[in-house]
Structure formats: C-alpha cells, structure tokens
Length: 470
Image 1: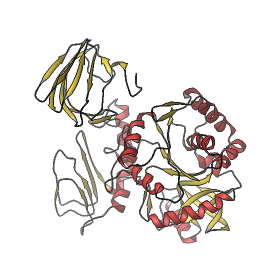
Image 2 (image 1 turned 30 degrees about the vertical axis):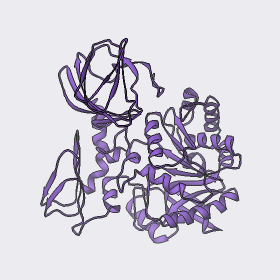
Image 3 (image 1 turned 120 degrees about the vertical axis):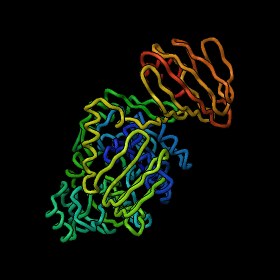
Image 4 (image 1 turned 90 degrees about the vertical axis):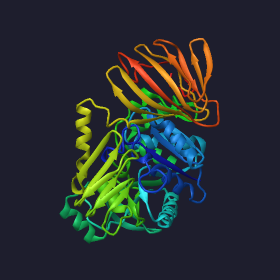
C-alpha cells in the first residue's frame, strides 16, 4: 500500500511577517481556504489505494498538525515528533521505521508540506508511474519540468530512459547562476528538484545502511525509545540528536545507483517568497493581488495583503509587496523579497519576538491575543474552545483579572471551583494555583488583565496538563 509521508518542518522565514516560527507557511491559508499542509494531505488522500498519512513535524507544531488534520477530516496515520531539526534524511528514516513496523511492504510517498500543485491530475499520473518504478526497487524523485531559467532551485539531470516516463538520474546539480540555468532550460534534459520522492520504505532503510549508516543507527536508536503521547509518537531526544544533519539528496539520492526521476509538469511551486506567491496567485487586470481591506489608485503588479485590523491604501506604486499583520508590516520591492530573511536575522540579533510569534498565539485549548501591553501590565483576549482546558498552574511574578465576555467558564482558584458567566469577573492572586476550563459547547471568550513585575510566558509553573506540557 502507498503511504503518504508529509514532512512538516521549516520555519518559513521567507514569508515573514505572515509566517513565524510558531506558525510557519505550511500552516497558513495562502491561496484558498485550506493551508498548504491541508492541501498536501487532501491531494495525497485522494490517490487510489492510499493509507492514512504519516506526518513528521516539530514538537512545537504538534497540536497545530492535529487540529489541521481534524479540520479536513483526514485520518491520522501517525504524527512523529522530531526532537530536533536534523534535515530530511533522518526525518524520512523515522517515518520509514514506523511504516516497516506496521507494514513491511509499505511504499512511501514523501511530500513536503509547503508546496503548491495546481494540476492534480498530472500529479496523480506521475505518482502512478513512479509507483511502478518503485516496485522495481528504484528510489524515485519527481523532477518538475522547468518553464523558465530559475536560479533558486536545484536541478536534476536525467540519464537513460527506464520506462513509465522515468529516467535514471545522471546527476543532481546545485542552484545554478542565470547563464547555467538558461543552458539547462535549452537542453531540455534537466528538471527542478521538487523534494518529492516515492520508494519502498525498506528499500530506503537498506540504502541508508549502505550509504549513511550513522543516520540509520541514530534513527533506529531514537525510534527504539518511541512512546505514544496522545496522538503523537515521541522518539528518543538524545539518540536522534546524534544523527548527522543531512538531506536525503546528499545522504542517499546523490550516491545510490538506483536513483530515478519522473519528470512532471503539474503547476508546482514551493512558494519560497512573496514574489513567487504573487506569480501563482490570481491577479486583477493591473497585475495586482489584493487580500483584505485594500483601496488602491494607480497601482500595478503588486501584492497587498491587509490584516483584519486595518485598511491599506496605495497610490501610484508598482512592483511592491505590502503585507500587514497586527504587530508587523513588510514593504518591499518584489525583486528584493528574497532578502526578507535578513529582517528575520536582525530580529533574532536584537532579541525580539516578532520572528517567533504572532500577536495571536494558538494553543491546544484555543488561542490568546495580546491586545495591549505596558510597564507592569498586559491585556489579553483569550478564547477557549469547547472542551478546552488550560493547565493547572501558578505564577511567581504576576496576578490576573479575568472578565468573561461570552460563554461559561469553569474557574479553579486554589481550593475553590466555580463558574463565571458573561459580564462576570474574578481575581487570581499572585501565587494562587488556578485553571480555566470550558465544559460547554460554545467557545468561552474572556479578557485577562495581568499585572506584576514580570509578564513573560516562562513565568508559568504547570502542575497538571492534559496536553502533556507539564
């Protein structure tokens, strides 16, 4: 059976300020109603004779993955948590070990979570052709037929034909300069390296054993320590950290004698920058892509994305990217958006938080939005979803006031448990053990006013937590 394996790592810094470390681009709805992660799952789920997907993700994103799976009704085959980022070869090894344990004859379709594919029929056809080659013990990668000389992608040079529209891989090529990319396009025998693969799970493990045994040893040791935590599979942290930090291309595909490539033209994009998103998005007659409340005059070939907090107006501009969020706004020329990562680096160097979190932060129980902050105080708007429960906790340096806006909240404060309804409030003294729970069927919305000498999120002592964060 074919098992989709979705790799959901990466920080998505090139799409800052919309993409942040705690909510990278694969979890954002950039085109359409679903996130890129959800679109990847839906595409894979529609393939014939396909099992439930295996997702490999960072621990910080585990609840987001679970919620987005539930949001589209796709069954969860497994959510494997990477204790640390060790690149694609070790991540795929964890998935392969899990699949072989469940189904020794499993075939893996490895898909990055953050790619766009517009022609699903062409994608489905390419998968069917690659599956035939995988049955012949080829490790198949998908090469995107280039339609312009892109310098931001790696390339694959094809060799002898293998049948099923596939070819032996002659060589992998790093990102070229423009003249070299133009020669590749003219040759017609090169494809963009898509980062998608199809092969038998055991075959991949065998190749790791031969070509990168340290990666396989670390993955085996980590998986041997695996344990189930709710819907998640946690592997050994120290064991996994011992793995070399190598991509599947470097560790296996560039060295094996059984690498094959299936060329495909399927409207693929890795949406690696704001300009690439503009290129694949639907635009108006003036070449503009607008989202949110935007008013423009004499604006050309621009992407303008307004937040839900305010309107953006443009006059007499062209070739711009303007992206507004509640706590940060980006204005850049389209031909300079690859330098957005420089802004992210500056934020890190300055010790700021805008590259890590949005103002609205999602938690397994709901979300909170920091709507105001000053010296010794912070105001949050909190939403607790039905059935959601915050950890039983206390704070050493702050007290809190809670005012319920809607719904019915169950409050624990030291030895008291009581309900708060709309327009009711309570005070949580500094050091008190407290918890908030929503036992109802509607969301609970409340305003929290914090006051104290320190208001950071690390001033939380979790005593009990149903989500395993204690």
